[in-house]
Image (tube, rainbow, N blue to C red; front, side, top):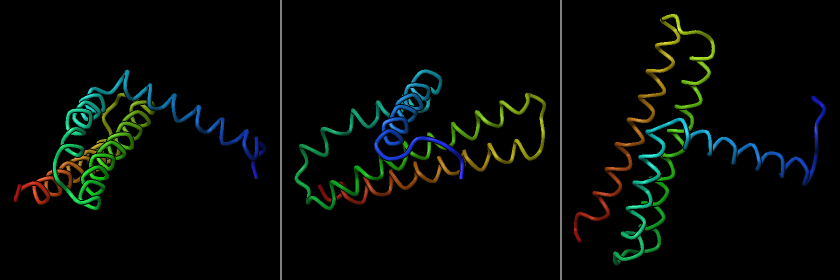
Amino acid sequence: MKPGKTGIARIIDATQYSMKGLRAAWCFEAAFRQEVLLLLVLLPVLVIAELELSERLLMFMSLLGLLITELLNSAIETVVDRIGADFHELSGRAKDIASAAVFIAICQFIVVWVAVLWPL
């Protein structure tokens, strides 16, 4: 076991690291900023549209899923770039796979929102 803080001190530290990560994503990742702005633009739809709670939650979770996937993609890209700027097949593959995850999250978001809102 690695030494470190426990209990509430660990939770406080973890929260601070998470906020640092969100700030870094906002400052350095244009795609993350665009997706956060998309979330802010679409939030009123969740409030205004006549939807069931389950539909609102599904739509909101699809947006959060996109943000989570983008954060993981950005983390993978950052680590790969840290390793070196030289092209390596495995580095390219890792970045492509992470990008594919974002693509799938975008497709999921679109399918959910269209499926819920289409009849309206």
